[in-house]
Length: 445
Image (cartoon, rainbow, N blue to C red; front, side):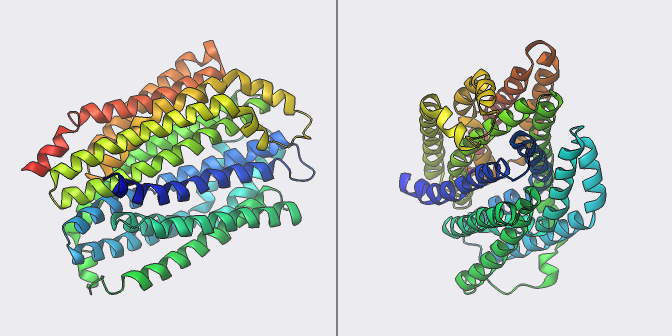
């Protein structure tokens, strides 16, 4: 079972970890754009990224809904069903992607108004970033669909290869456009466009080459069958609400940081959040393993394997959390300074601010070990309602802490709210599923 878990987890860890590394590289490049203040540019990039996180994460239901249903069809060896899931995911992703692109002006103007820093030069950078990167959105959503289907098919290698390729292209083009080509952070946005569309073309070509003999012929009427689509969207409607709450938390994290009125705090929170993201994407590898294997063993009605899989995924998650705690305790300054130009005039100020809040980054891995794996279990078991309800209640707690303690403890309130949100979410999912017994009972029936 450990081999099965690691077979899926390790490629996902490798592919996942390239995402925060790409973010770190983008932050590194933004801090070195010629003719700009490092803190201002990093802050503008963080807000631009937060806007697209809001768009992308609200579309991640396509990946989650596709993955769980596909994994169960794979476990039950229902070939036609997982073929239909691929086509349905592609159709939904294409429709949502084109809708988001067509609404770019109202989306952009509202986002720029809502996330405005009050600094005209910073707001101009954010605007340039948004209207350049919006061309990548249809491709990014399509990748959700294709990667969700591959995860359900127990294939973690292809998403890993494509993720590495996409992020290497992104980093290389970001440097080429923003440093060599002197484009500022709109060069980083253009790099995303090039990388995402390359990723879609590559993934589609690999799926055709690898699975053309396993996929069966289906008709258009079967793809858009209302009964099947209703099940798909019933699951996804819960995931949409869940994801909206998650994106709201991250968005208000960045907004609250900007509202502090101190560009150093905004820059430091952005960098510290990158350190958290580095952990979260690695731990997510075991969430993906839990997602794929939970769905597979439920489809195969194998209760023994299901219980062992869930237990070991939780153990692996805790091991990763402890490793990160040790790493951050020992080397956070070294990691932090990699993200800021050592010649930057305010490097000492940024380090001094970071030292006040680094304790949160040290304790967050332990607080977040359970919720990531629980997400994977719930996706694989298609327990979308539990995911939705736990997210709603933990988000309520987040906003109460954020705005109820901000006047008293300042920036610590942002981190207290964020850490509590993560921890409460995992605990709620565990108890809302009757300590996972609801999932086991359905398989035993």
